[in-house]
Length: 195
Image (cartoon, rainbow, N blue to C red; front, side, top):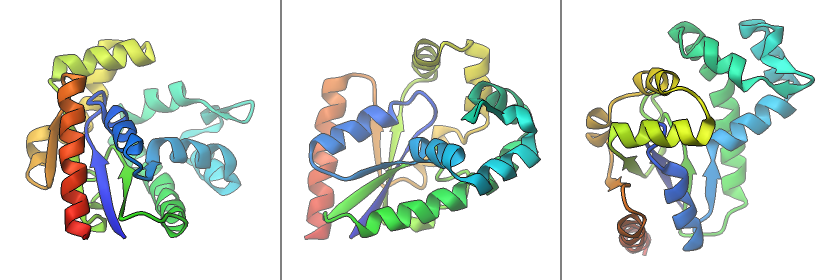
């Protein structure tokens, strides 16, 4: 089974593109969603996060995402520490998920494939891009945070120009119809590769 990475900066529309692949019958693993689940369910991860970031990381057993985002996006060491706790657990969970899939290829949606040095784990990588101003507005509308907070997160990720060098497919996600056509084209290419 081929493993395809789906990545892109915050607000690029990775999840929208992922949903389009799912509509075509492709199994999709959403790393962000699974990371949040693991951060809430796993006692060990919880303990490690509280040790790194403090007891305020959880409110009544739930992940205090606002607090965590506020501190880790200002401190690269803390962000790296958090990634070192969460990413190996997500990786293990993804591997066991893959064993339960029956498809020519699966997609793992992950925001920081390049930043965390895991690009070698994928057979192919799809990068979703969008103009910076559109990305900022999407995240402000979606998450209700300030443009400054979004820019801080964007600046913690590689620029698209760097990611493009290591990507097999690039989808510029501006209009939904054009994006859908591109998803369909890539899907058929991937099926041919697997054939």
